[in-house]
Image (cartoon, rainbow, N blue to C red; front, top):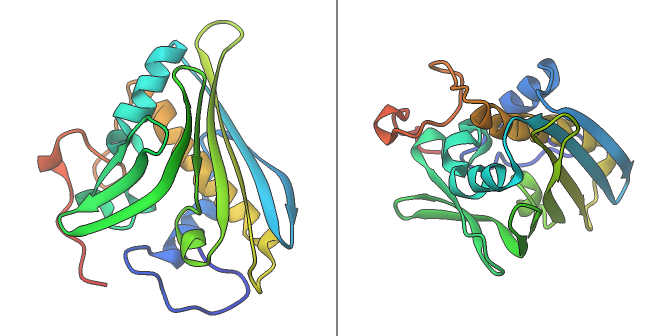
Length: 209
């Protein structure tokens, strides 16, 4: 995700320019919407409908995150390992041997209904910004489950955060689309940047930052 107003030292492990270009050039697989955006923050909402009941969708969210979360939206790519601990105080974390990152902290767990996490995702964390991320599950008309990914972020920064909103929205649409594709039984083709359940299929280590 690029930073629209101020130049900054690149954050290790994230290809900010490439990520922004990909996010803006390709349509998001989920229904995406910037609910509001202002200088001090923004609210985003993405939604998908999947052919699974809420409990199985929940299970995929928390147990299979390392399989569906896009590898190019992580710190250490396909070589890192993602996990979510579905408990209050649990960690949405990424690990690569001695390298570790706490992406977000779990604050509310209602299996099959709501998972709430707090923190700034990606570069927002390093900027000192805070956010609330929710995965909401509800029965969908005609069967299956509607999953809504809600994110509100803000805090002090000399930048105008309204410019970040459409970029982050596209990124989160891709992330939620990864979960939806996983639940639909789809696998990413080779080189698509998705994650694999077979760790032997993962890409070779990234070059040092």
